[in-house]
Image (cartoon, rainbow, N blue to C red; front, side, top):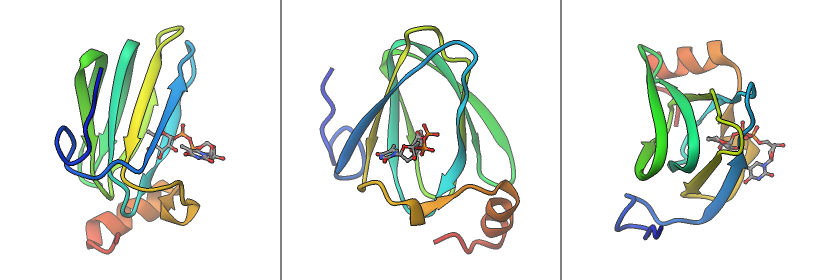
Length: 117
Ligand code: T46
């Protein structure tokens, strides 16, 4: 699998990390103010819930031909990892805790007021 920044994804890739999934674990539960990411689950599967402050939608990720782009100010949760699954994430910036919004009520207010950035 090959991913090219500014070609396959609409941003320059500055960081890559992966999450090894195990049954029963959930991750995420936050939004990013500015970060852009592409998620792909080339091995196994997981379900990603996205929320823009107005509505929620679930995406099932399974296989290397699927990628999920997540722009700024989107709440994300990852659920239902299959045992031994591999979620690879390509990100537009280095890790920065200041970019996180970890409180859902704060996120929803900012998103609805359009003041996230
Ligand atoms: C996201 C979803 C899809 C680092 O030090 N460097 C890193 O690059 C990352 C990703 C994390 N960390 C540390 C920060 C925390 O102490 O690892 C710990 C767990 O991070 P976080 O709570 O962000 O983990 P996840 O798995 O809930 O979320 C991750 C990404 O961090 C996040 O940006 O959108 O995957």
